[in-house]
Image (cartoon, rainbow, N blue to C red; front, side, top):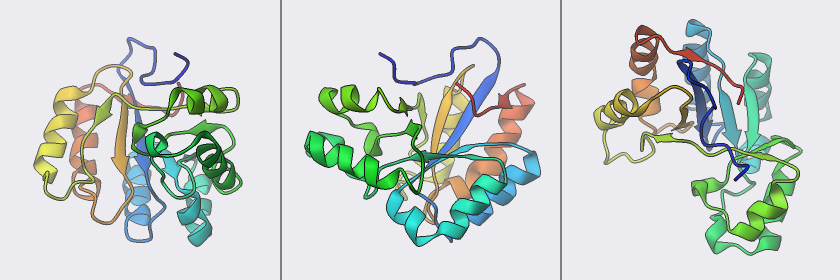
Length: 187
């Protein structure tokens, strides 16, 4: 019940988030687009990628974006024990965040949630564009974004080379701004 799925607002506010990075093939491109539009986002990074690409983590934070914890190895909470799940989050925290957590695949068992909610704001989403699925297609991903956003939507895209986010982000931002939306990183 304390998890965050949307911003509680009637204003035309959106929260743009990116999972699974950082990735040297996509993060700089996404940062350039966000800079161009003066938009801040939340990057839910895996600890493993953060350790591998600390310069990208530094670039994300230096540009004013937030970093969230996405576990160390992107394990599915439904397939992990309580101890393994907590260890994954704890191992990732020094490289990502001690405050914000998004479960990989959006999956947590109730006991995992109860253990983590005392320390972390657990952030899910209400709009998933399936941009990670190369067979889904970037036009379908863009169409979902255009049709499903509403005041307070938390949008999840993916910070990966193969993600359709790299192709559709500019068009989506233009659409959202023309509809009167603003992007924020607060809940």
